[in-house]
Structures are given as structure tokens and as C-alpha cells.
Amino acid sequence: MAKPELEFFDVDLKVPWKQVEDAQEGIMEKIVSRDPETGSYTRILKFPPMETDQVLVHDFWEEVYIIDGSLYDKNKKETYLKGYYACRPPGMVHGPYKIPNGCMTMEIRTFEK
Image (cartoon, rainbow, N blue to C red):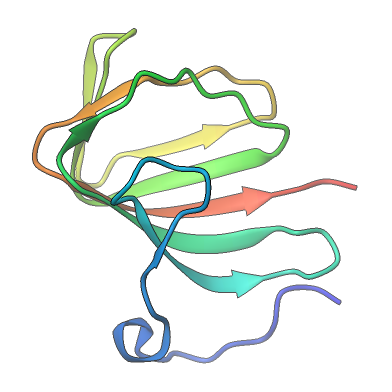
């Protein structure tokens, strides 16, 4: 089974915000689709104004589109704004981040079998 077929629906009304497990307090998510076989999913993330100290490396593909706000990469000394997109293969190092005014992203995680 793959991700479900979904026609347009109001995400704000149908999907509640939930605290992201194992993440800093206040980082919230709405998982809008999930593939139960692979674990791949698409979600919307909301970050409050905050700063992270963690360098991240994943074992999955990660695509991120900034819907609103901005992220500042503390290692690269670069700011990423609304409309920016990233596609990270497994093993790509990223972060830590400063999020001075909050940020909302859409993220697609793809786990390969």
C-alpha cells in the first residue's frame, strides 16, 4: 500500500497540530499523508521563535519547502526565506538553526526499502 489517494481537503479543519515527538517543546506537526509500508510521510511543521543546537543527519530523503517565516543556518551562516526549497539525500548534514520569528514548512520524508 502506498500513501492514500486524497482529494483536496481543509487541513486546518481535518488535521490537528501535535507536538513533534523527541523534538524541542513547541515544534508542532500536522501529518497530512503517510505510507504505512515504508513509513514515508508528508507533514506541515510549525516552529516557534527558537534556536537549535543539534546537527541533523537522517537515513531518509527529506524535502522541505518554507511556507512562511525563515531559518538561519548557524554553520553555513545563511538565511532561508519563504519560498526556499531543500532536497536532502540520506546522510546529508544540516543545522543547527536559529528561527528568530517562527517558521512553517512542508516536509516530505521518503524512506527507501
